[in-house]
Image 1 (cartoon, rainbow, N blue to C red):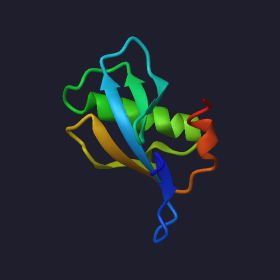
Image 2 (image 1 turned 45 degrees about the vertical axis):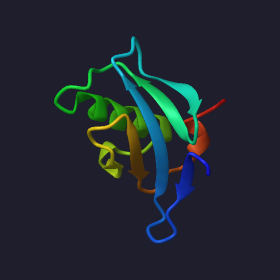
Image 3 (image 1 turned 30 degrees about the horizontal axis):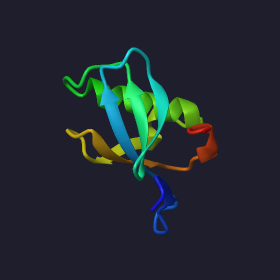
Image 4 (image 1 turned 60 degrees about the vertical axis):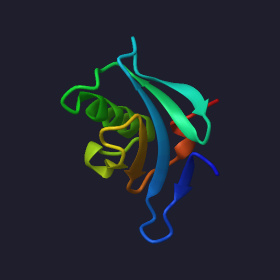
Length: 95
């Protein structure tokens, strides 16, 4: 199973993410099993890490922030994120 797929029903890009909040900087750290590991420069308090993740993914994929949403794992390190109308997943992970 890959860390990304296209939802056949909606056409959205679905990402499996392993989040690491509280890092020095926000960056892609590689693969963690069947998920993309992303270090987040925000603590896991009051949804700040999720906001940081959404902002990072939107910026890397060239979409608006409201096109990115956490659909599973809001309070977990393991998350499923949906991205509506992405241009290219390779912009997120180059490695």
